[in-house]
Amino acid sequence: MEMQKAPVVAARPGAKRVSYRWPLISGVVTLVLAVALGTLIALRENGMPLSIDAEWMTELIENRAPVWDFLAIVMDSLGGGLVAILVLPVVISAALLLARRPWAAGYFLTASLLTGGLVQLLKTLFGRARPENVLTNLDFGSFPSGHVANAATMAVVLALLFPRVWVWVAGSVYTVLMMISRTYLGAHWLTDTVGALFLGIGVAVVLWAPVAARLDGEHALAGSRPARLSPVLRMLHARLIVEARLLEPTTRRRLQLVAAGLAGLGALCFTVILLSVLGRNGLTAIDAPVQEWLAAGRSSTLTAVMIGLAIVFGPIALPIILLVVTLTWGIVARHAWRPLVLATGMLTGVVLAQIIGRSVNRHRPPTELMLFGPDPSFSFPSGHVLGASDFVLLTAYLVLSRRWSTRGAVAGFGFAAVCIIAAAVSRVYLGYHWATDALASVSLSLLILGCVIAFDTWRASPVAGTADPVETADPVR
Image (cartoon, rainbow, N blue to C red; front, side, top):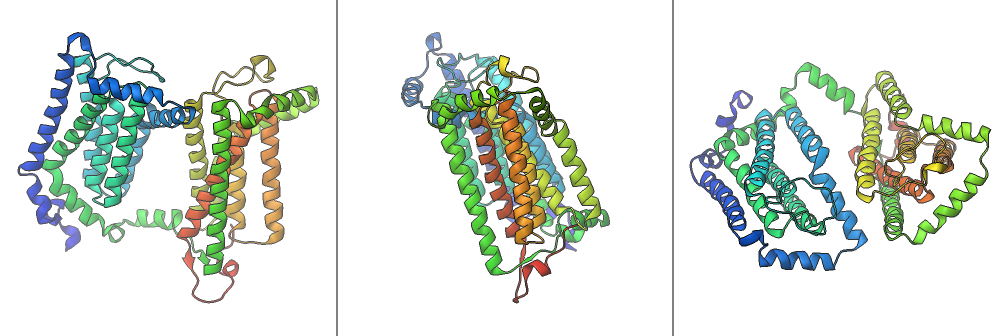
């Protein structure tokens, strides 16, 4: 039977021939090119950059602007630090293991680790000085770029594991953007990123060649994965993923329009606020007056209420509330799809807040205005407001979308609006955020809500007849 075949046996003839010669040779040649480029740079007198390096850097510096600074720093956060070293490798490897592709997971992890080790080795070996006018924090050594090498390795590995045109295109775009961002920030010379590109491609291809047949056969066998699921995995699939939700075409289109409208409105509002914050103009004109107005109305009773709200929507209490809600909902309901969507949406908000906050690095209001102890972290956006908005908006949608009524929608989303306003006012009142920080968080929540509605609607099944989709959907449990 096909399911009893080993990965090598199930591989296509073309994949079986890969391990013989040319991919391995081409990968080694690419690695040699990376080392040769580094050697050429190291042998230059006084470590002077190549002419193309100097010209490229001059052109980028002359065209720097706040919006490009932000985008480049976002790429910096994605390609380095915990995101690149821990989050992405763990998430991708775990996904491959869940897809029953252990060889693919091992290949990805090995390529990632080897690339990181070679980057540090070459940086120490060549010791190239960084450019001047740097806009981010850096470690030792300019050649090669670790961010670009990681991006190139990940792009090629995923493209080899999932041979689709869109995977190649997405990986190429991501790698090129990473190359541009590293030079724009002044973290690397252009040739540093080119050498890193050679290094990442070379590592991915060299490691792929000997196991290409196994990877291809594993991919072929994984296509029949549902038939191979154990009873435990089938139970988890039914519990976590399966949810009977039927939608008529008109209802589906209406929800898709709502999702697009919310996502578009959120993205537009956030962009306007972000540009105002980066340029220190526009909507930021309301920050000081709102802060002064709330500070003038402070009282001991009101301060106690605002501190209570800060605790409820804070980084300790809100995750506990989320855990209790999702676990209880998952246990009581016949499925855990909606609790899983709620938790995923909340986690997305946390990741976005960390990336954006560290990229913008906006200062909080003066410490003397803070009523609950000093906080030196970033101000934009407000994590409390983003968490509260995500929780109440996503919960309201996930509950009301299965048993819709106008009265329930008004009550549910009205309560959500009250919670969001209370969270936003408390953060500004207590002196930890500007008004635009809170508005930016609400904008991000609208964007996340739109994406959740779009994905949840896409996943639902159509109704062939004219039955009311509300009656055919599962009740909220």
